[in-house]
Amino acid sequence: MEKIEIIYRFILAAILGGIIGTERSFFKKQAGLRTFALVSLGACLFGYLGYRLSFIDPASTSRIISNLVVGIGFLGAGLIFLHEEKIFGLTTAAALWTTAAIGGAVGLGYYFEAFLVTLLTVIILTLWYYFEKLIKKDENQ
Figure (cartoon, rainbow, N blue to C red):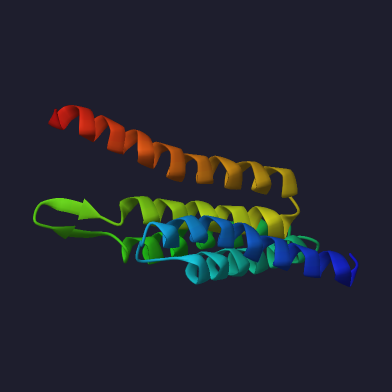
């Protein structure tokens, strides 16, 4: 693999994570652009290392990815809290977990899948936010 493709993977992962993080920042959530870009970038590195190590040990990719899923789960759990019987941070934690998957996909070379999931994530986070507000508005009338 040429160095330029390696650079492309890491830049792409940071950008895709940053896109999702921008949406979270816009809505003033506790994790934003920098957090999401870094998580995606780190996951990309793990995915890339899994890809590279698969030539030495074919099972290494699945071990690295499975541990990435667990590790990001712990990070996401730190974003979730309960206040006055209301849960906060669950959507941001889920978005962070999805962003790690996107970064890992880029690291493994699954660019189309990463673009598609990024697009769907942004659609879910933005359009459904307004849809939920509309439903709550109708319930209050």
